[in-house]
Image (tube, rainbow, N blue to C red; front, side, top):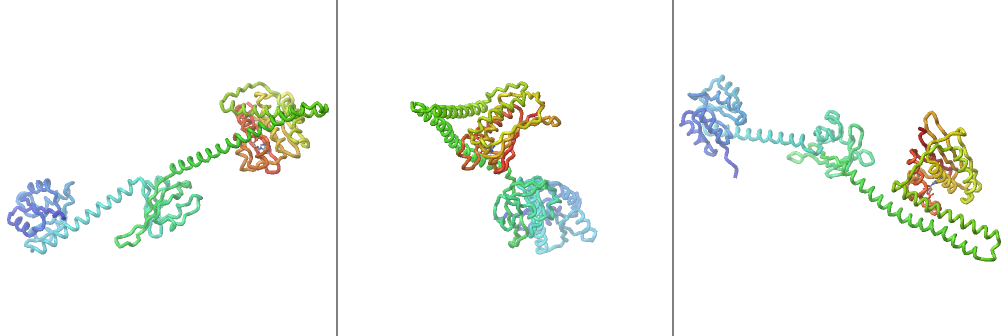
Length: 490
Ligand code: ADP
C-alpha cells in the first residue's frame, strides 16, 4: 500500500480550508489557520506540500513562504500559493519568495488537482534524483575499491580517489586516456580489453612511475534503462600483498622440495665419499698381507692406503668445518701473514698433489705483484684453506692447460685480490650463483658423479666473509674459470 501524501493547508478562513480539504480528499490534509499554527503542524507532521494563502491577518503568505524556503528542515517542501491576489507583481513576488506554483481563486477541482499532483510528482522526482546523485557521489568518492568509468570506446571519463591514489596519476592525466593504455598482463604486454569483459581477472596496471601493480579487475558494461550500453565501469583492487604472499609460498615450497632433494643427494654422496676411500683402504690392506708382494708393490699399496686415508680425512674435516660455520664456532686469529710465502707453500703442495687429480700435464703458475716482504693481516690457516679449496677445484675440473694463481694488490683502491684461474671445463652462467650453496654441484652428469659433495665453495665463501672479504667467479663453459677473493687492505 502506498502512503498518502500529506498536504498542509494554511488559510485564516475556515471555509477555504474545508473546501480545499474536500477537493483534495485523496490526500491526507492537515490545516493551519495562521503562521504559528503552520509551524506547529510542520513540527509534528511530515508534510509533502504546503498550500499557502497569501492574505492573512497576522502574517502574510509571502513572508511565511520566504521563511519556509530558508528553513533548514522545511526548505525542500514545495509551496503553492492560493490567493485572490492576481496582479503580475503578486505573481512575481510569489515566485521570488520561492513558490513552486501559484493558484488563483476561484479555482476548480481539476485545476487544483492537476497542479497539486504535478508539484508532488516533480518534487518527488527531484528529491529522488538528488538523493541518487548524492549516494552515487559518496560511493564513488569513498569506496575503498578503485573505480574507473569509461565511455563506449574505453576512453576514461572519471576515476575515483582510490584509483588516483593507487596509480599515482592525477585525474587530469587519466581523463581522455584509453583504458588499454594502462592495463597489462603479467609479462608486461598490453591486454586485449575484449578478453576480460564481464569477468573478474587478475591483471597488472601501469602506475604513473611505470610500475606494474597487480590488481583484481572487473570490467562491466554500464547499461541504461533500455539496456543500451552507455560505457564501461572498471572496479579493481590492489592485490600486491596477496601476490607477494603467493610468491613466498611458492618459493617456500620450492625451497622445501630443493632441501629434500639436497638431503637425499647429500646422503648418497656421503656414503659414496666414505665408502670409496674406505673400500680402497680395506682392499689394499688385505693385499699387503700377501707375503709374495714385491717391495715395489708394497710401496704402491701403502701409497694408495695413505692417499685414500687423506681423502677420508679431508672429507670429514669439510663436514666438521661446515657444522662449525653453521654453529658459528669458527675462531679467527689474525696476524701479519707473508703472502708470497703462502703462495710459494701452496705452489709446492700442488706441484705434488696435482698428479692425484690426473692434472700432471697442467702447468701451475704463481703470479704476484707484491713486494717480497709484504704482509697482510689475516688468519693464515684460513687463507691457506681458502686458496687450497680453490686450487683443488681448479685441479679437479681442468684436464689440460694451466692453472695460474696468486695475489694482486691495488693500493689506490685499497684492496688485495687472491685469484685462481684455470683453463678447465668452466661453469654455465645460470649455475654460477648456486655453486656457493651447501651441497650444490653443477647439474652436469659428469660433474654430479665426480668426487666432492658440494661443500668446498660454501665453506670457502663462509671463511672469506668471516675474514671480511668477498668471493666471486667469472667463467665460460669449456674455457675456464677465475675465482677472485677480495679483501679490503685496511
Ligand atoms: P665439490 O666439493 O663438489 O667440488 P664445491 O663446493 O667445491 O664442491 O664446488 C661446487 C661445484 O662448483 C662443483 O661441483 C663444480 O660443479 C663447480 N666448480 C667449482 N670450481 C670449479 C672450477 N674451477 N671449474 C669448474 N667447475 C667448478
